[in-house]
Image (cartoon, rainbow, N blue to C red; front, top):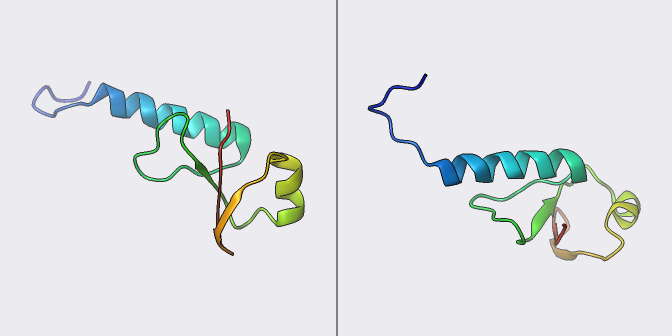
Length: 72
């Protein structure tokens, strides 16, 4: 059990769990302070051909290494 002298932010704990589960299910990465309903990052390891299959709705390419997409 964590020390009672150490503060906890349950909203942040739940946010991190949501981000980890979504990342595992959809093969994405979440930026800092990500919230449900916000854009996520398509990792550079996923090439465009595979990304077209995973994200048929399309994505925004900010840089060749930084693509973002909305997922459910």
